[in-house]
Length: 240
Length: 284
Ligand SMILES: Nc1ncnc2c1ncn2[C@@H]1O[C@H](COP(=O)(O)OP(=O)(O)OP(=O)(O)O)[C@@H](O)[C@H]1O
Ligand SMILES: [Mg+2]
Image 1 (spheres, rainbow over the protein chains, first blue to last red):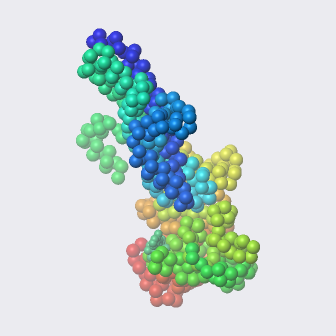
Image 2: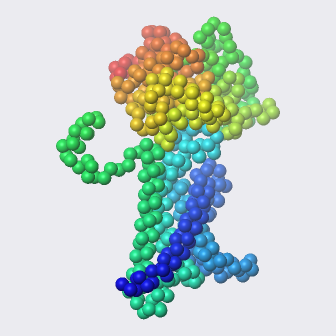
Image 3: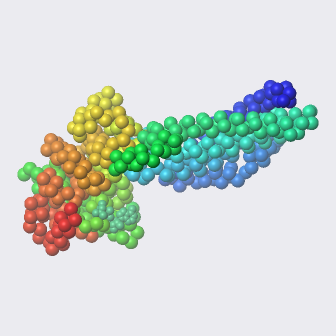
């Protein structure tokens, strides 16, 4: 127990780095997802080609290799070394953004065509169609996958330990070296990652619920509330 | 939209055509003119050089068997489909094309927005925006595409909702309304854009029978109190008889019969029209 209490501040510091890189990477990934996702739904062949090229390149590249490249190889080209944290955020954001773009593209394409046709009938400009009608409806569809990508990005952020950013994984390795408590050192990291993941999951679920409410979809009630068989029968009879 | 230069050159600005009298006696420039309009999906030629005109204020009902091209005509007018040949004119302006010097070339988005402003459409499945309240469904388009100030748009929305009998539902989500109520909101939404032409594609077909009358009453009211030009596809023959000046019977993308409702419904000339009307009345 003393292991945990003694090393808590160090782990919290590691969690802080993990959190920072995750949030930064997600912000970048989100912007990239939106840009290349929307480009991918446009009628223009050029726009779609740009989106496809981006997605195919960055989906295929491992975040780790991309990060090494940004951190070690780029300085040779531009003569300027990125901060390790910046290199990590860039690598994770560019990589996860490619998956996010596919998510955005799919969600936009899943909005019924009839909605698009209604925007034409009401003479909206193309940008207004997207902003006022299509994206708000696609948003609810995007969120579950975005939630998963946030978690993926957080787990992927462990690669930063390889360029000496003292994130959770880095801290765990150091604690193992210094204390020899291999089991405990990694158990503590597992718990911290788990807690972070729960926080992100909670936030995305809130966002999902909000998005569905805005579309007039009622949130799923917990099963308990309508489990009484006789009442359920009455309710169904009343609706029809 | 493969269309030969020659074909385009042939179609110069048409003069007022005297072939169809309007609701009044005076012959005016037609509000809508289909000129040798061709529409095909792959090898399936849906409209083959279709010609017809509609005068301002005229209310026209389109009838005909399934697949005869009624929806296609409305969708072409709403610019939801690309035209494959000929020209559609709205108020003397080509809808599908624009002038480049003396030539007609396929219209771009900006030009189409200008011409399309006159046209509104109500869909079979309502197509309300689920991400907006009833109020915003009605006000967003006037605000954003016509530049109407929000306060004015709100007032107009309240008026229109009052007219369709849904004043007190203004702040609800459309998903909370019945089909008939949603369709009445959709009608209000279309009218908020102050269209000169209203396209109605089987607007009661998706409704439960008991909800049909409410929607038809609203349309009757619009017919009575406005001079909006209407093109309606419907199987509600009683309604068509009451409100329309003219009925067009379509078959395989051609106009089989064209006349006032009393004639078409009372003494149809074509055998095909007779059997069609018989079938509709049978099922309705
Ligand atoms: N998107 C499409 N792709 C391919 N064919 C189509 C498409 N839309 C319509 N068609 C075809 O065009 C023809 C005319 O269709 P349209 O919807 O205009 O008929 P309609 O008169 O409205 O029929 P209904 O009474 O069933 O609504 C039909 O043969 C139909 O199969
Ligand atoms: Mg149809």
